[in-house]
Length: 244
Length: 313
Image 1: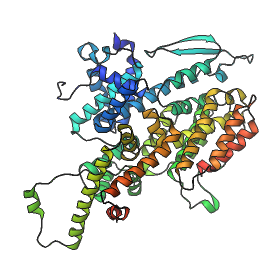
Image 2: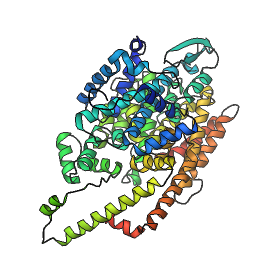
Image 3: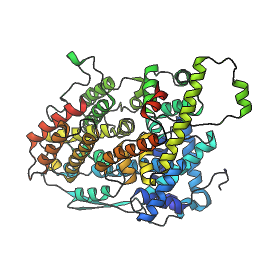
Image 4: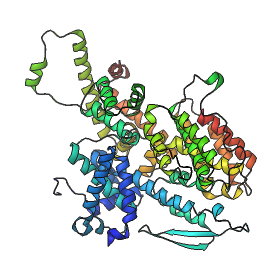
């Protein structure tokens, strides 16, 4: 009965969520069917628990968004595309996944994407990559694995890469520490702005904050982060080495 | 845990996040959610996707309401019949004939997430009675010409122009003028010819009677606020060109202009060489022109021209 009453709204929300998932067309359709079954299961228990403290459409949007995340984890494991990539669509999510999850080089990722999505251009894909926030996920490699890749005759370039990798770990670790020292709201503002690639106006909407003072607040927070990183011995020029 | 091995989100948790998105939690509870979002990428993603979807669905409702905006509800005798629309918590709506649709729509819209976007979504539906002379004559051609031909448009300028053209397309569709529809579509094709716009081009409506809503969703998703600005300003320009002062003094339109002024002012403060730029001054002037008892149409058109140059490149 509950579903019948809101069938149209449910359908709208399933469609809108699927479109934002970054899935291909077939997977979007599959997700919509899967999620609908989940909503109908057990006498619609996911819906019938609604107590009326929020709007039903917002409640349903949260429920379906969570199902979308579950569906993706079930299909492809725990990998989360950035909000910016999701907004840019399936090709951007594909490209981001190849570069940041599968750790392909940019060239390889572009070649693969061009073959998976014929019709686009190399330059367009580079532009898309430019719009996706840079991610760095530190990962640990066991000493055995290191022994197998470590060459006693390393080239200068390899030494440089290794040093840069150490510096990147140090910067990321310090950045994590600095972010943890911020209030949850401040940390979230920076995450949404720089990790998720959202505009200030979008951050303001999601967090229900007035937009105008947010510009200044972000500037101040960046200043705080800079001070915090400098206190850990990371100067602007040192961090700049990562981008050489 | 669900049978798939994932932790199911309980309806209570989902409703708590929904309340957060609507700004309905008390300070302590909001802080708890902020903490969760700052440390849990999964929860953060759920909230971000839900925020976008809730705004889109609410905007669809606003567009449905827009179909009944006073401009289109005018009777043959010129008298307005303005239905009042109420949206219930459960998404159903009932309609009465009476006064004050716009105020009700604004009140309903203002309770929903993504206010600015919703206003922009609702704008073009009531902008122009018909396509007045000069409706397609923008301050710029779609592509740069003459000595500027080699200067590429940046992302924001492209988004702004795309938003403008989507408004044009919507009005052309509503008025069922195939030649105008084809002209706008051709400008959009030229503007968004790059490979990165494949998704947007797939949403181009080839049938002149099909509204541009699906296209707008794609354009907005790609370009964000820049497209919204173009779309909203073009709706106001079209209304001014057709002498639709009722639309121009609509609270939705006035609040759009005010929000634009505030946004531009915030961006100017945060940007290099802080201080109000020409965009801020023009947006302020636009707001003032609209807020007069009788909107100053000439001033509106002049300031919008200025804003087109500043924002559209």
